[in-house]
Length: 170
Image 1 (cartoon, rainbow, N blue to C red):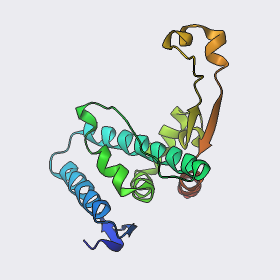
Image 2: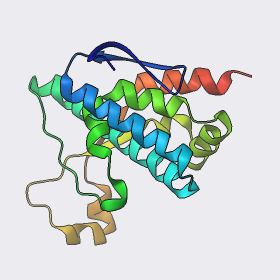
Image 3: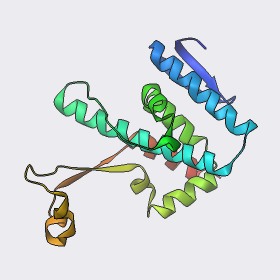
Image 4: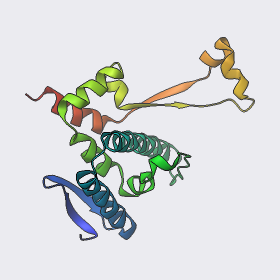
């Protein structure tokens, strides 16, 4: 796989890479993981992979929004268990790769997941909560305090448009 240009995953899945060697290596590892699903199929692995892709896509959406506000590259910190291995490759690969993978899930599955999240917009959204400086975890037990914590909903418009088109198609 070349470090720049289009890379093809699973036949018709094409993404443009920035030319970053780390990104290209991350995409190679993602391809190997997808091929592993074919040879050692366990449904829970595919479901976990989907959840990982969505979690990373949301992290990248938040990072992109906050980066545009602060005009600096942000570092994304996260703490997941061993079953979530590979998320670091998805982060390096970038949002375009995540969106392309999500878009290749079956339409019926995506409809079910959108319905489970109450709407497609909710599925493609993330809430950024600005915790007050004096915040304590126990504040979440107090309904009045917890509901007054300000938050901002960020929608990944590209993913929303992409999935809207897919779900409207016959």
